[in-house]
Length: 129
Image (cartoon, rainbow, N blue to C red; front, side):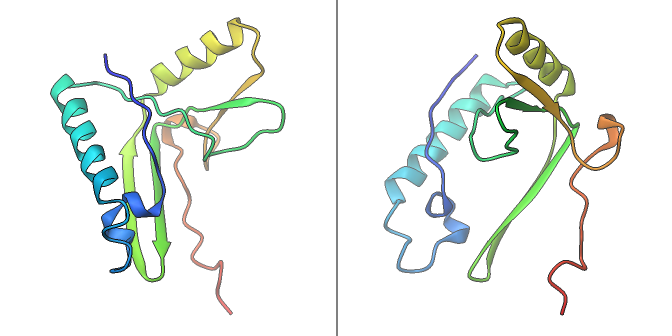
């Protein structure tokens, strides 16, 4: 098992940095690569990410229960994408554990009604003139 508190933001991802930003977070990016090596050395089956930067449900914590996750960031024409599987069983265990402690929590999935097959649905018509 391994745990970490890690910074985030566009300047942590070299691919999103403008030339002027490349040196701003060079040490942070180096530390993130070191963290990645530590995670890889543990040969983890599942990584749990706790973040306030996901689905917001008023008055509740939320646990993403989908089996697929995907997203993209685009800053000034620079883009990164992520597509990965989710561990639904661990998510459901976390949901139950949080609930059993009396915290208000909801499970959240994406797209279809079957969380086993849900992921972000592309909407290419959004933004069209």
